Length: 320
Image (tube, rainbow, N blue to C red; front, top):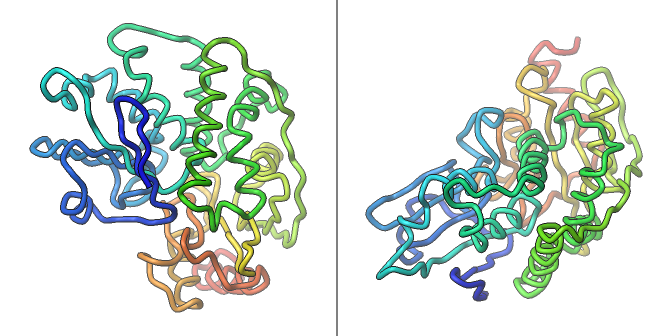
């Protein structure tokens, strides 16, 4: 499904992914992929003006900017000149999700003229810095949660948070994702104009498993619950993000940083082996945060994930 947000044509392919070669072969010139649409980290082909803004796979997560921040720096670096044809931009954006980072990146691209050169919008910079810190770390970056900016961030991205918590994101059609994207873009417009509202964090959660090494959490309140738990000392986690209508579940797995001994990438392999999946269609992500298949979810119960994780920790000598 495609929709026009001048000067960009946005194509939404829910839960689909490509590799860089497939992106070059199957999309037109002057195409931009955002935030996990294309595997392999940031990339640019100056011949065709294909661009991948990404920080999910093939990167050192903590040393790689969020997708929205990469877009911001690209705008400052003259992105519009690379995308211009016959004096005007007519480019394509491809996304497979409408999460906070993706939506913010889309909004920045649409509004690129406001940020070129030395132009500066301080309150947008603050919101972007918060998005960058939380998105890079999967919510682990410590913040004072009793802060107006946190509540405004929560309000801006509430439409996505509600769709994610409901389980509807896992089966959302392109039309549903488009409506969700438009709702967030509208709130970013209001934030730009100084008309943002505030929403308190929904920190509701249930601890399903607790050990010195990691917790398993039912994120009833969504990402906000994870922010709260990290701010209160959690170092590593497996989170039940949502229950899908088909009975399968959506999980995230991660750690505060690379300095926490919780072997996230090896757990992807272990979980994929248990589900007979591969990194291409199953569990995947960066070295500090990832999760179950965007398309398939997971058929494993949290108890099975707990047991597999504990087996891996024993193999690694992290627990005896």
